[in-house]
Length: 316
Image (cartoon, rainbow, N blue to C red; front, side):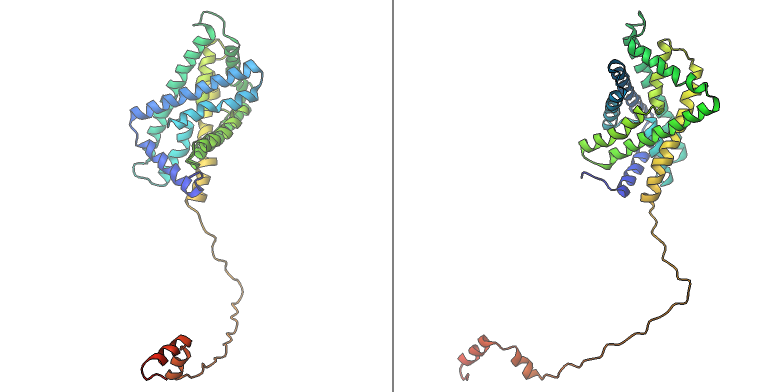
């Protein structure tokens, strides 16, 4: 089947959210660790392409490679479980409780953080030849991203915090759209295309993804960027996580669930004035002609019947 209609798609989303809550801590952590590691390697690749070619659009077009690979492997990101988990709770699936959902979110966050930080360390080693030289051009670019997306927001105060939050909302609106669209087909090529389009949009427009930032900002700190761990937590990661939660839940999960999972039909139209009943006109009754039994039998005789009767003994 190449296309899954929205009502069945919502059922798949609920099933996926419920299934993730039933996973053991080991499996949840492994899937989250690998998911973040693959995603952030894709981010490192995209920054490398953008820096070396001076074409940010090209980097954005290529960034979804990591995202596509991790979801085809069935790994998890915090941004995805933010969208799927609540639907299973709302639908009251067995075992899908608020406590189970929060447990899943916490384990996925921890696994994502470990995977992203590991890639940050490995890439920092690559960018500095084991911290023996100054960072490469790509390393400097990552440091500038970290500075601009922490201190840059802080310079604008509350307006900067609001902008950061909204960028987190917009990010997971698009990212969760990619997660859900991957379920809308059983074809590999269709899944890849469906994921690729919204992920390219979010990356090129500079929206804030909490898992990508778990790589960019620790990398920047290790590469000597001019911001602190506190700057990263307060002026990026925490507001981004909250924005990602709101974006996936309010603009992807709930609209799909309420319009396709719990569809309401239009109420019957009520009349306000008196009901006028049109007179019933009876059609005239036409009596059928009376035909006796012999005539009825004769009417069914054809030429072959007559020949058969004549050929019989005594037939005339």
